[in-house]
Image 1 (cartoon, rainbow, N blue to C red):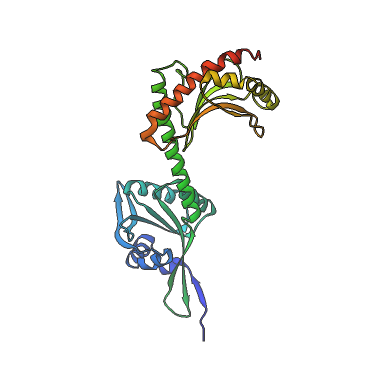
Image 2: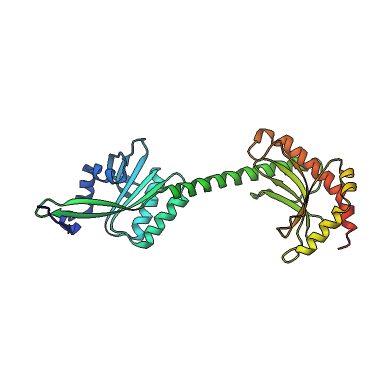
Length: 310
């Protein structure tokens, strides 16, 4: 004969959340750990955090601090705030929020935290109790939301982007400092986090830019007169291109001529390809070559730009 599972109201099993449920969970943490596929070791109940107290702290197999906050009711903003407070003050790397009724809004909040909070993994767990026939009630934990391969990828991408922004800022700061020793061009420009910085040529839509990638740096004249000006951009490029041999002879080297027909802009550039953004030890040489290329490019092109009469 097979018995039928019957759901039991949680307050019939644990009348008081703090005295009964938290104590039971602390003594039986392996039940939760099994659902999460973790190895958890209980550390402390009612861990003091200033005037507040976290329900349970534990450690995982790697020794990381784990925070567990219990709620035998619907999730609410108070507990969400408590979890964030405890995570920050206890330097927890895993946060587990247990509730009998997770609200959709809080599920979304936990999903967002997993995508936004590098280094901390958040779980929202639903707790239920069941019995079979006249058996003792048993707890059932179900993961409502938690870290996933997708959120790990998102967090990794954001971390990479933040690292790249930091590198870009440091690169432009250094380049601009070195540039001031040789030219006043870009003298009033501040470093940023984009992959380019630039200044105007004195003619609308024509700018002298530096650009940096992971593999190269370049100095360029960028032609972009604005939206719906593709034809005008191409005409300016073509006029300059008609003097290609003369311009390259004055420059002293070949240049990259990119009409960029599939985009609204065009560019004329000198690319330096022996180093890129992550080659910090090569930055000084790369920056010097980019600065020298910009000085020569601006000197050669300024008269040709004036002759465009636009």
